[in-house]
Length: 442
Image (tube, rainbow, N blue to C red; front, side):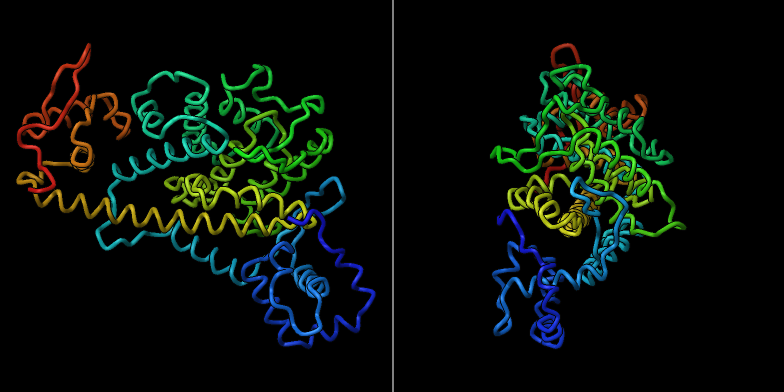
């Protein structure tokens, strides 16, 4: 990426050229395309230009168009640039999609999940987010091992598993913090939960970094330098400005909740107030703010899973670089987050449709389906896909967020129907597929 962007303000000294650009239909179309995709100079300079127009002149015109609609958010960087946001028609369309899907009713054509299914979906979403968010930051363990650890409440075997467990515990707490405001104290508490027993120095848990720590942001796994955070004295000022922006009510100055959550995510990553764990903190706060604003579907959506995908991960760091290189224009990061959210919502709806279709199909195959509840259907479906899998009572209890007696009753009922068989393994009993287990071929 070009280290330095053209000084677009210098072209203001030639107003005649700008007037000509303003009247050019080709230039208007170029600006429309650039804003639809929200192109950075890195890509914009390679676009087909109107005749006799240099990329630098066109960039100046584009910047002026964006400046007229930008909104400063009250946070200033070390170079006196005001962090800002500029919403295009494409952004508004994407925000409308999020509004209609994350705070309304999902229509899948297969019926809505019941409360028990919703609880399980929330737990699955929290687990997936905890795993993916930690893996982005270097946690090296498989999804299967990590999920098993959380569901069976096993003790983490190493720092990587501890990181994932911490992330899960923090994410599970977000609903309880809906009424809190952003503050130093809140950041300290959340950071401590996220980093307990994972940092080199215990005293760094829930405590701001110092300049002596010489913290920098590098891209995983390339090691490329992405960002040098501000000095801690400047960082503390920026945090206070950020708190004011996040905590102010809609009656003061309305900003769409998803936009605000994305700004919060970016600026925590930019300010980087702690020695480590800033990425996990930023992603957790993104969820916290959306849950606070009643965007309920985000309880289910592991957006970090989208970031972790190979085609998305480079874009995560690139979005940060674009903002910093272009005068604090957070729109680049917002554009990235909107695409992630849309993909996550679409994936979730497909998943929900598939799961409900499987459950309905399974009900039809079971003669005594009226006596099979959604939790039992879920575990039968799981065993259909993994025939050698074993289910113990504790895992079933945690997976479904139910009391011990409810879990025991569910599994015992399936055992009595010979759908499951209870066998002893070591010091505990586990349940496996029984003689009358409905295989997928039945």
